[in-house]
Every structure is written in structure tokens, then in C-alpha cells.
Image (tube, rainbow, N blue to C red):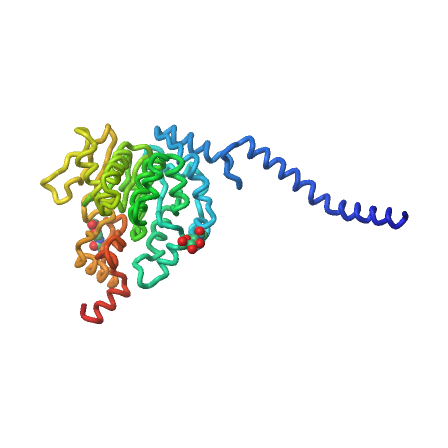
Length: 370
Ligand SMILES: *[C@@H]1O[C@H](CO)[C@@H](O)[C@H](O)[C@H]1NC(C)=O
Ligand SMILES: *[C@@H]1O[C@H](CO)[C@@H](O)[C@H](O)[C@H]1NC(C)=O
């Protein structure tokens, strides 16, 4: 009896020693659960109310984006993305109000990159010397826009966006028969749902893009307009038109080639045929027929001409890319009038495009007299 009682007392004492630690923990857990319950949709970790803030900010500037309010906070906090940003030496930006930029600026300050299926597979591709992808390129863009929200879209996030906000297009999105087509398509959904700046992963940045975005509603790049660099306010009609035309073409022929089904050909046809009399007028006398400012529904759409913005060289001009690579190697390139450099390492061309020329490849070519 005495031993049993002693045993019980000892157990109670042991339990009691743990209590001072357990009690506050339990109280905190209860409070935390209560907070979560009071704030549905909130994300744990000090960002309670981000969704509400984003929503308020979006509404006050006249651009409502439910997807930005609901999806963005969880996307910018994903483990793989945070690890990538740490590897790039960029601290993630979690203050939502910074995501929308200074007052008067309409295009939200959110930078989007896309690679399917995921960040790890991008890192693996970039580490392969035979590939034209390199982590430094997107890293330069992320680092030059430190006050911006940043989202790296993998396949899971992409299907979450389409499935939640565009369920009628999910079947098409999933069935697109190449990764390039799916990566093409998602940027239109992102621009419509969230807005911001989308950049291909073979784009290097030289300076912050803000002065080129100014207070336009949509900013594009000729020729094409290309879909490698697109910036927009959320909810712009242009993107619904692009998606509707893509769907029409997909229903006619799901195997149609990439440029016309999901790429720049689709963009150009939307400009040409699908925006109605209020749409941009093609300037046939110009080498870049869409370049200049256009009005769509009273919004301001800017298309920068070739040899401006992100295009020091065009995709079909290997000589230009080679000369630029050489000038840069000699430190003699004047890049001050460009926001960045789209290299066209595009995988839709065998072996990458003309700009896939890296310093190593240039050296090889020069040494072999190529
Ligand atoms: C990323 O995708 C690759 C290739 O499909 C897969 O092997 C890997 O497990 C994925 N990684 C993560 C973190 O999901
Ligand atoms: C670089 O180009 C800009 C305009 O394109 C010009 O104003 C500037 O003087 C140039 N700088 C040099 C060092 O040539």
C-alpha cells in the first residue's frame, strides 16, 4: 500500500514537473485554434488577415482579385519557394500591402515564374550544363524587385488556380499535350486572376521594371506580341478573350502546334480578330505592327517595340545575340535602355533559340572557328 501510494505520488510529481511547460502550450494551442476558427481562410504564422488586407487594397485601387486575396498568401509561403528564395539570397516579402505598389500604379507588384512540374525539376534542369536554363537569370529578376510579391508556379499551384477559379477550363488545361502548352496557358490564367508581371525563366533582368509599367493596365512586347513577358492588372478582358480563343482552337484541334494554339500566334490573333472595333489597330506600316499605346475598353495597353524593354535581340537573329554576348564579355555592352534580356532559350525550338548562347558555348564556337 505504502509503495503503491509512493509510486502514485512519484508519478504525480513527475507529471507535475511537466505541467508548467504543458499548461501554457495547451492554452496557446487553444487560443491559436480559436483564432483560426475566427478567421477562416487565414494562414498560420503571423499573416492573419493578409487575405483581408489584400482584398481591401485591391478594391481601393479599383481592381478586385479574389484569387490574389485567397490564393497568393498561401503560394508565397510554400516550403519549396521559401527554400529557393533563401538559396537566391532573397528574403521573402510577406507584407501584403507592398504587393500592390505605390498609389497610382495599377499593375500589382507581383512577379511570376512558371516551371512544371516543380521547382526541384527546374533546379535540376538549370544545373545541367547542356541546358540553356540557368538559375541566375530568374534570380536576377527576383533580386531586382525586392518589394514585390513573388510566386513560383509549379504544376500543383497551377492546377489549384485553374481548378478553383476557372473550373470550366480545367479539363482543357490538363489535357494540353505538352508542358510548353500548359506553361503558355497558365500565364493567361495568372494575368486574369491575379495580375502582375510574368517573365519566362530564360529572361535576365538589368533593372527594376517599374518605369516601363508606369500606370498602364497591360504592358506587352512586340513582335507578336510575345507571351514571354506579360504584365497586367487583374481581371482585364484581354485575357478572357485569349482564353476563349485558345479553347475554340483546342476544341477544333487539340494537337494544333504550340505557337498558334497557346503561344504568340494566339496573342496576335486575339489582338487582330477578337477584341472588336474597340481593340488595337494593327499598324501595318511598322516593323512591329502592334507597338505603341492602345485603348481597350478605355484601359491603357502598351506594347513596346523590338529592340526595347526585354528584347535587345529577336529570337530569329543569332548574329545579334552573338554580338551582344561578345560585347558583354568585353564589358562594352550598353544595356541602360533595356529592362532585361530575353535569351530565347525556348525549348519549343530544338536545342534552344538563338539567344541560348552562353559564355561557355560562345567560347566553344570561337575556339572551333564556328
Ligand atoms: C518534383 O518533380 C519531380 C519530377 O516529377 C519529382 O521526382 C519530385 O519528387 C518532385 N518534387 C517535389 C518536391 O514535389
Ligand atoms: C548608353 O545608352 C544611352 C541611351 O541609349 C545613352 O544615353 C548613354 O550615354 C549610353 N552610355 C554609354 C556609356 O555609351
